[in-house]
Amino acid sequence: MKKRMLAIAVVTLLLLCSCTNTTPQTPVVSGKKMGDLILVGFSQVGAESEWRVAHTESMKAALSEENGYELIYDDARNEQENQLRAIRTFIQQGVDYIVVAPRLETGWDSILQEAKDAGIPVIVIDRDIKVEDRSLYTTYIGSDFYKEGETAVAWLEDLLEKQGRTEDTIRIVHIQGTAGSSAQLGRTSALERGVSRNDNWEKVAQEPCDFTRAKAYEVMSKILRRTKDIDVVYCENDGEALGAIDAMEDVGLKCNAEDGVIVISFDATRLGLEYCLAGKIALNVECNPLQGPYVDAVIKRRQRGEPIEQVKYINETQFDCFTITQEMIDGRGY
Ligand code: AHR
Image 1 (cartoon, rainbow, N blue to C red):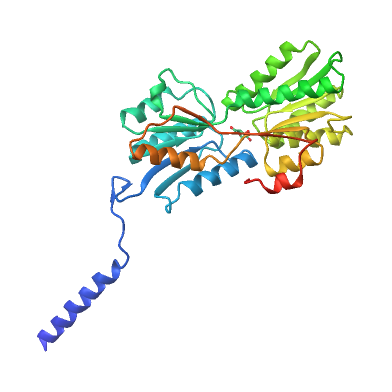
Image 2 (image 1 turned 60 degrees about the vertical axis):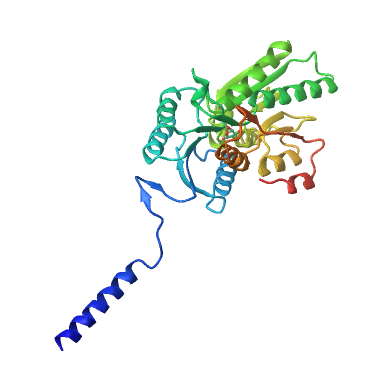
C-alpha cells in the first residue's frame, strides 16, 4: 500500500513538473535573448505629427519578429533627455544595434561614445546629427532637409516670376519646426538663402512651433493680430501648415496660390496632400517616413559583413496644387 502511494506521488509530481513548462522559452542572458533574432533598441522622438506616426509604423513593421528582429521601442515624448536615458538602457541591455531618430542635431557625443565603447553599432535615422567624431555612428538614413527647402524656394521663385511679382514686396511668415533639429535647420537655411537672394522678399515673422498643428495655430493667430498683410506662409511640416491655415481662415484670409496666401509645406502626408488638392497648400515637398525597410537592409548588410554607405538620402518628390490629382494621393503609401 505504502509503495503504491509513493508511486502515485512520484507520478503526480512528474506530471506537475512537465505541466509548468509546456512552451519552450527562449533563454535570456543578461537581458538579451539567445537565438537568431537581432536585438534592436529604437529611440523615437515622439508622436508630434502624422508623419512621425507613419515613421514609427514603418520601423515597427520592418523590425518585426518575422523579419528576424526583437525590437525594444522607446518613445522619448519629444525630450532629448529621454532619448539619452533610453540609449543608456539599451547599452545596459546589450542590444545588437541602436537606432535613433534624434530630436536635435547636437548633444550626442558622450552617449554615442558609450555605445561605441560597448561595441554597439548606432544607426541614425530621419534627422542627422553633428558629432566631433564621425565614427561614433555607422550610418545616417533619412532626408536631405536642405534640398527639400531648396526645392520649395525654387518653386516659389518660379511661381512669383510667372505671376509677374518679381518687383512686388513679398511678405513671408516663417513657421519653423523643432528649433535645433536638422529638419528645421535645413529647411530654414534654404529659406534664408532665398530671402537673401530676392531683394523683394521680406520676412515678417519667424517662430518655432515644434512641428505641431496646435502650436502653429496659436502662433499664427498671434501673428495675425499684428498683421494680415501676408503673401506667403512657409511651414516646416504639414501639421504646422494645417494649424496656420486654420488660423488664417478664422480671420477670413483665403489660402490659395492664385489669389490668396501661398502656403508651402513639407511631408506630403495624406491629409497634407488633400489640402494641396483643395488648393489650400500650394506646394507640399515630400519627406518620406517609410524608412523601416532601409534600416532593415542596412542591418542585414552589416550582418553579412558587406560595406555600408555613411549617408543614405531617401528619394523624395514634390506635389503642387496645379498638378496634383486624387489618383496620386490614392497611390501613396502613407
Ligand atoms: O524630421 C522629420 C520631421 O519631423 C517631419 O517633417 C515632421 O513632420 C516630423 O515631426
